[in-house]
Length: 494
Image (cartoon, rainbow, N blue to C red; front, side, top):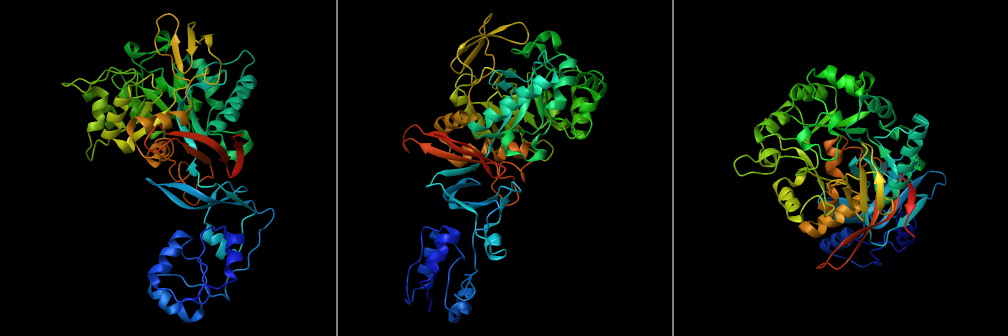
């Protein structure tokens, strides 16, 4: 007979926060019903009479007698936080469950181990009321925001530059972006030499008050094809003819040393010396992305063979798809033991790309799609006309940014969570699959899949609480309600 002890209820509520309880006194239940009830509550946490332990083990269930329930109490100062009544983003599903984190270590914990081995109840229980709990969002292409441009060194030098970076970090985290790659457009070597030491990975101190965390710089240029420069200043573009010597002269030799502040470099694979440069960068542990390029399919394929693993803002600033030569886009249709399909960035702002183009790319390689903003310093700023780094002027009209002299698209000012919302509505993807494009996939591309972009035990407790608004059959919208960095709440929506 299975007996659920009456005195278990208060234990469940206080220590576990379980909302669905099996409240039966002395009544015999079949194994099937017990298993179903426990799956709706919290599997493997229940009380039974000691006489039923063997039969329960035979059914694959875990018996815990009323005499061995752990004595738990909240440990003040433990820093343990338990999120309950939430939908967790796990793989391609939303799973009802709980998540335990530590605000001291900044890591995701094993709740069962904390409760049963350490006999510790959480210091704080956060009831999310059925909202979505996702890993923090990751933006791999952010040129600037809130009036600051990563590619501009202020007159006051490094001190003012560092303050600008911190301003971006503290504002950006409120949008749900807990980690990102600060991106430098094509510049003169002296800009890279000054800026890169200040843009390297910044999470070592694990200080939640610093806001969003740099995972390393993204250098978008200057080794780009001048015919596909976009808004990059063509006069500063280079060819990596001398390979590692060209790279060192441009970015600074110290900035190529391991550990390098550079995480990702975008270049055009058809340029002289580019393929050897890709090999050299890969050997240094720096990721390479193909972009701003006239590469044919064959040239792009050679870039992947050399070690490139990504495509920068697919479709934009590259040769268009042609039925006799698919160009860079053709890489999404190629997969073999020697040529893996690359990751690819997509700007889902409704300006850079048609929604159908995004859906085609996603269907071709769903595990490689990474949503990016490509936002620049006017993100978060009011509409108007602003000076830009190369002497041009940019007109901001809502999310649309264009060069004053020729109406070329000049980057973006969209927030990453809005890119996810657009992607949801344009492709019909599920919420977990859409969030994967800003969490798990970019983390995997960067080689950080065990630390970022996941809710697995041991990963950083960078979390976003999301409210899914809108009808199931109509337009859906994700809204950032809370942001937690290293297990500490850093933003809550009013």
